[in-house]
Length: 278
Ligand code: HEC
Ligand code: HEC
Image 1 (tube, helix red, strand yellow):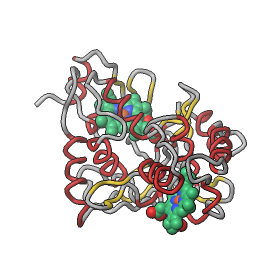
Image 2 (cartoon, rainbow, N blue to C red):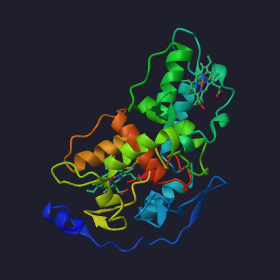
Image 3 (cartoon, rainbow, N blue to C red):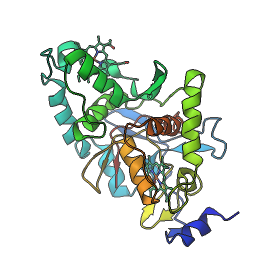
């Protein structure tokens, strides 16, 4: 069997041994909230001992932007989401704020999403659209739109510091299996799986970028590259395009199952929303 390193070389992607993660942080503190950056890998992860936040793999400059909410560019979008929160829309003449006194009641919600509801996987995006349609009589937001991503971030922020804890068993099991299958299946012209980069090679350099474990506990993340909030499914799509595979659509059943599986690979890590990445 060819190793992933030769595969990468063959596919003209440059992979170099990076300096080992030059970071001995175990936790950081943001706005008085302590975030756990490393946790023992859940038992169902056969090939890893430790799960690690993507923050550990970024440059010091990028890391610094996440340590202070005044420096974190994501907060511009969170301010916009606060405006959306109290804007009346739809046939019922209501805003989110008409019914919800504040946002703090959503603490913990992100840690358990996606989850199974009525036999299907429910993401934060699904909840927000159900609230808009069923309670406000408003139009659903496009799944991977700016307005959706900032509301997902605003609700996710309420869980910052709490450990990710998605369910993988019971009625979640078949979805988790489907996500696992997607994670380990090689696809695209480069014939690679998520695991080839984010499990076999985290810490190593690929082109000018240091590979992380591909965790999603900090999503939506602000990326310096495109100066906006990026959704989980948007990131999955980008990674699939990079290996020249045809990506699934944001909001598709495939990406929801993959999201559940990838979220479960970060069970034990703190919610970091909104993270800053390059
Ligand atoms: C007409 C009243 C009403 C409006 C308008 C409304 N909600 Fe809700 N929402 C509720 C009720 C009632 C619940 C269920 C009880 C609870 O969790 O507070 C709920 C639940 C939720 C939950 C928690 C879901 C869960 O399973 O834990 C979220 C998140 C939420 N709403 C977000 C929003 C957002 C975002 C908006 C605006 C886009 C909104 N809501 C508009 C009444 C409303
Ligand atoms: C060819 C290597 C490669 C493959 C294959 C790949 N990715 Fe990535 N991915 C990257 C690079 C490079 C980055 C940016 C650096 C980093 O965070 O790892 C990234 C970033 C990510 C991130 C963001 C992590 C963070 O902390 O912001 C997620 C999530 C992710 N990938 C998930 C996936 C999933 C799911 C798959 C499979 C569908 C996949 N990737 C396949 C190279 C890859």
